[in-house]
Length: 580
Image (cartoon, rainbow, N blue to C red; front, side, top):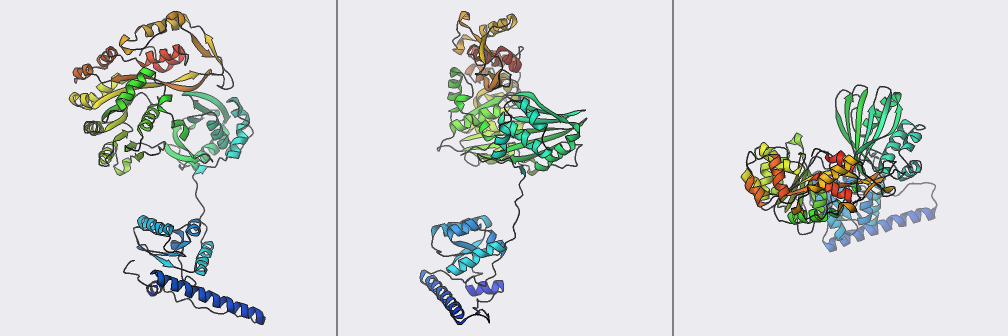
């Protein structure tokens, strides 16, 4: 209890209130019976107040009568009405440094917990007073006098009913155009979001062109044209998008970034919005950050058994660095999150440093950098290391300062996970050296480097056996012949090879593909590679050393998945080019 307010008299003096006075009602037309009943009611109230005051003295807590006490709206709002009714306690005084609760049962643990929360949240002194049921009723009624503050929701309210309504009309991508042709501008946004969720879209592109507006979905890594709209709609559509994502409607000559949420019963889905000026208006890209899309288990990533075994051995080491490489959209974040979830047990502390945090991971401490407050990857990483973590994930290593802090962490007993923008695993080492990292520090700190891409899988609904064109078959033979014997991969005889494709159906929107899998190369830092590290080592030299140690390349892993009937040669050529 604070020394500033020690008694009910102090409370009354502070608020300028007077003790509650019971004044009988003056209704001249009351009958004698009614007057008697009113008098008895007042007597009973007085008795209950006296009883509450006696109980307070007996139990050693202060007492207050809230009838006539000036409870401020600021105090009431500290405890939501539902919480007040469930705990039988209200906040009746808040001065900034002082908080007072009034409760029917001051010694109840939920009341004590409530006071502790309020004290911690507002850094204030607190106390609990005993009140009567009449006082509690008066305080609860006071909630009705509070001005209703309208909740500001920055998001698009897409209800499950609306989604079900549109889903029944959106069986294939071609249906999007039909539904939009008869929709208002407000409905068009709902249709776009409903279709995006329906077809597992990662990015929605809305682009102003000379004569029309193009709406395209990126599905399984490939853009699909789904609808066009009259150019006359552009101003209304882009205004609607900017309004819900917190962007400036009148700014059209420079890029803007915003965000909004789609509110659904199964959980909120965030949408990240980016706009840039173009010749005919603006280009808008909305990235749908559906929580379930990142929830991929380690076993579902697409590692072949031998590769998975090698990687598991490296991530289970207590220290060192695991790096993932690849272009934007190659699945690096998904891979890192899957590894973190694999390592996430009660015995370890995991902290991530990301820019931005796109998906929330349960049981993992995630921190977002803020350049405006000088909270950078390097500075944030130094702070994280003072948090006693076992495992640290840094979204990206971009400069020498971050690289040196990460390497130092790996050398001092932490398992570090991060990404680097290089085309393949072998390019990571020259990239580190070009940043200014000394080779003698890389050797003991690096455990493994992953190169990866995402390849579309053949649609299982329309999968059928096929034969390859002569040039494709020649390519497959060449890649298979170069798989190093030290990799341990067992290749079936050519006479047993079978190839498949998807013929196209409604399930895959006639594309022949449904879903994606990773193709990987895993460079393990062997003694031979460590001994060869120097400031002049090239990507080619690193790759050749890795192959000698048994690394299968991206192309080789992809072609092995072709032989397993998972994907096609054309898809591997698309994502891992013939020249790699």
